[in-house]
Length: 119
Image (cartoon, rainbow, N blue to C red; front, top):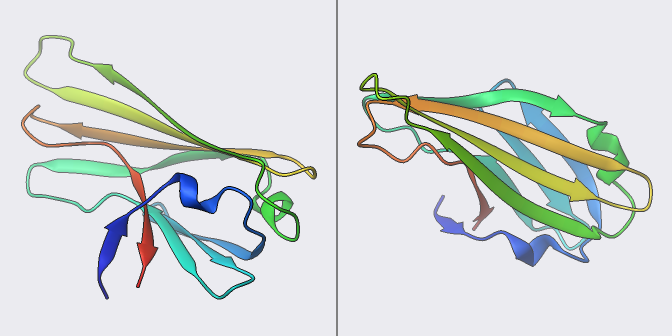
């Protein structure tokens, strides 16, 4: 399975499922059969996980996605550790969902979560 980093391609698509896989990823399947995964590909000295899901993922199913936005916030407190929060925000006419990833590392690695189209 190869991964192509993609995000705004999901705008206007209709989801038939949205499934959270523990604290590692969320997989969306569209009515066209395309699959998208929200995740972070772990490297050695880092840890990135889903910290929270605010809203009901099922509110994203059955109606076109009207908003898809990614916002990041970082904290380099000077203690030789780095932290990044990635907020992935989605909406349909049924509701709004905010998926928050938290990542930490020694500052050398990327801690940002992304959306990938599974091909």
